[in-house]
Length: 366
Image 1 (cartoon, rainbow, N blue to C red):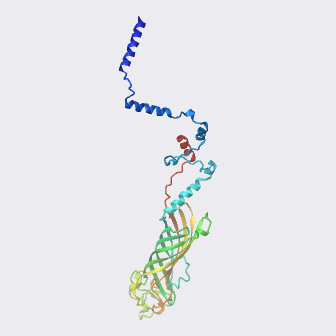
Image 2 (image 1 turned 45 degrees about the vertical axis):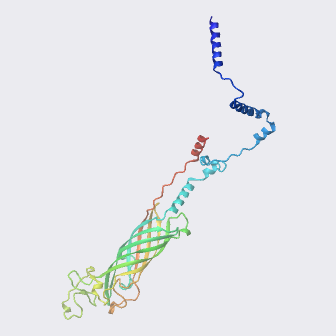
Image 3 (image 1 turned 90 degrees about the vertical axis):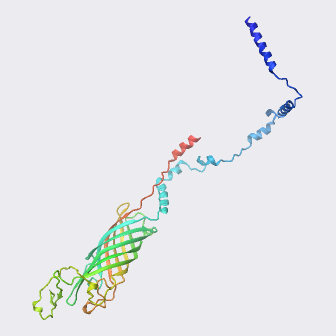
């Protein structure tokens, strides 16, 4: 009974499928087109029928592929790369030098600040060009400099100098004194011999030459605290009246207080009038920088300032009587020591990744 039912179900299914199937008419144009397409596909030569020599030619022929820019940059060119030993030979110092050289090219303003102090000595008419005095026995001076390198061996420096100069001359025939406040500023070109010396050295000699503007305010000590003028007698004493005064027997001896209270220009002792208390000068300096650290240097130097005036001490060759001096211009000598600090900050450089990291990335991509 079960088999009979199974057979009936199968037969019914077959009839149902046959009843829903459309009969293909050979005369239908669409059917003809489909048959032509099938015939053309059948006309294609099977792969097995291709001659063996042709397939071998295809298999042996080199296939040329055009490189794509999309992936070229992401892979390392192994043909151009050197061995790991060559890569290791490119040391960290060489890499730092490459970055330092590029930084030096980018830097334009690389300042160094110098702060110093020393002794200012006057060479002029009063004191007979400082004869009999030690060059360093004078008044204090202070200087501030800003230096910027132009080349390896040439620097440009801007400076200001403050201080005092003083001189005293006490002889039988002439007794003169003065004190002057000096303010000067200018620029110099510094030559440091760097291209002629060894790279590793502990000191740098230098010589510099420049131009400056100078202002001076000169005074003299003509009277004591009580307003009594000094009169120098032939016996070497200082009195409150002239030696030839009728009342000279009543003269009182005085002592200098070394207070420079009288303005030389206002006193007009030689009839020069109201002259300008400003001038120009040419500073010439020699010295050396001693390396004491990466940025800190110790500096010693001596500079002589050739001024364009003979009036710093208020005495010239045109002065009256025994006050007359020579026709030479006044000069200043500045012997000093200073500390130099380099303000240049190194630029941050990108770290070079080790080659192993590139190898790992290459392995991950492949």
